Length: 160
Length: 195
Image 1 (spheres, rainbow over the protein chains, first blue to last red):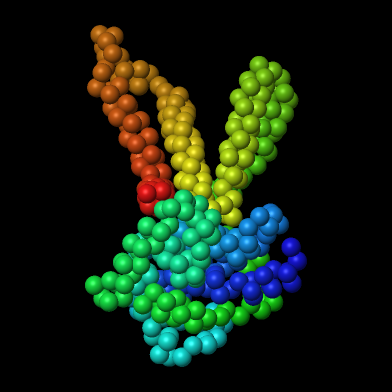
Image 2 (image 1 turned 90 degrees about the vertical axis):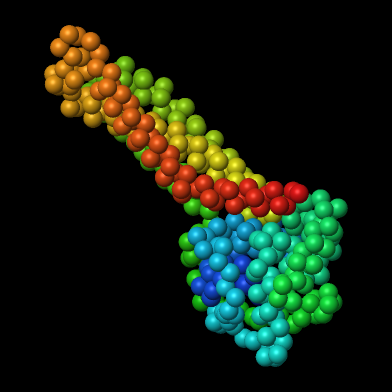
């Protein structure tokens, strides 16, 4: 893969990677590490991409695989304070929305790691079929899990 | 509420700037991924074996120790084959697998890696023990094992056995502390996905 192609692939999918990495990071340094690792794995694996699935499905898989398999000593610590990754980030939402989004991140981070993966795909508006393809589980399980996690997320957003 | 959350999520478009400098940084970055680290360690061990084997073999031939040279081939060839098989197995954990399959592959790789080090550490402790006892073997030890009446000194042998068991136990405990928690977490995530 050429560097220029890699750059455009990363540019097109950085939103997906950023959102997922942020949901699994407790601080800015962790976010940077996750982003770097995901990008590196994409760079290394791209030549084996056969086009059997959508490129976004492939990116979701790699990003979630990196974030879920990275088991750190402080992985149980949930940082409830917001952080803004200064990783050359340009913000494009208002302060009010940003506050709401930060609250949503806090609620997501309070979920179990696997539940976080499912709710992130749900928020990304993925169909159950694609979610099953990314997660590698039965499609009939997805609906049940999504409903349970949505309820849990609502409770956490309401501070319960 | 649900659509509100999805709409809010869509607004979440904070962007990371992907510059040429950043691309160079990413490409030269050393992976912290658990599978990459395990494969790297196994490759280093494999290459060390590949280098050590011919050196050892040629030295034995040079000193006309033909029986030892044949024994070296008998031991090393399956050993190199074992490492190659292990590496092939570890390489199956492709990052682009589905989340469930990847976590399962990580877990199985860790199992293989841990089993490998448990066996290796038991052998290392046993070899270290016999090498040191042989090197320091003297009549005084003979007297400790056999008392003046020529009977076996059970308590001395027991203390050796306890020492060996403690050394092996410590090695296994260190391996468990390094990888046990990771394996437990991976297993629980796999179960959560399956149930």
